[in-house]
Length: 233
Image 1 (cartoon, one colour):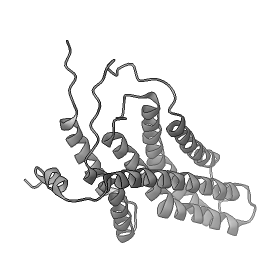
Image 2: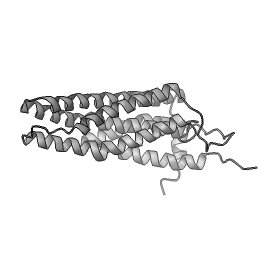
Image 3: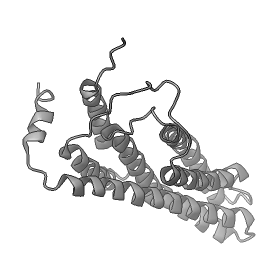
Image 4: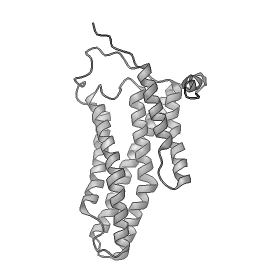
C-alpha cells in the first residue's frame, strides 16, 4: 500500500539543482567503472604473480590479496557501475535498445556480472584454498586471462561511451517518441543508493546490492508506465 504514492511523494520533495544531480550520477558511473577496471587489473597482476612465482609464501599472499580485493573493492565497484549505468539508460532518452552502442554496453555488463559472480569469485576462493594447502600451481590460467579480459571489456565500454558508434537498432521505430527524462529524485537516487549498498555490505561482511536491485526494479516498472506509446497509422 505504501509503494503506490512513493514516486509522487519523492517527486514533491525539493532535491536541489537537477543538472547537478544528473552530473553527479554520470560522474559516479565513470568513477565506479574506472574503479572496476583498475581492480580487475590489480587482480590480474596479483594472480600473475601467484601463477609464476616459486615462493609458496608469495603464492599464498598474492592469491589472498586478490581475493580480498575482489570482495572489498572490485565487487562493490562493479555493482555500483552496473547500477548507475542501468539507471542512466532507464532515466534518459538513450534507453536500452535504441542504439547499438548502448545495447552493446548492456550485454557486456550483464555477461561480466554473471561471470564475475558465478565463475571468477568461486575460482578465486578455490585458488586461495589451494595456495594455503601448498599446491604449487593454485591459480588456473583461465582465471588470470579472465581478469585481463574483464579489464579490456570495461575499456571497450568506455570507448563505446565516448565514440557512440553504429546506428540505431533495427527494431527502433523510424520516428520514435522521445523517452522522457526522469525526475530529479531518480538521479539523486542514482547517487545515493550505491553508498547505501556499500554500508550494507560493510555491516554484513559481504557484497549485497539489495537496495540497488529494489530501486532499479521499481524504476523500470515506473518507467514502463511513463514511456510514450507509438500509435501505428
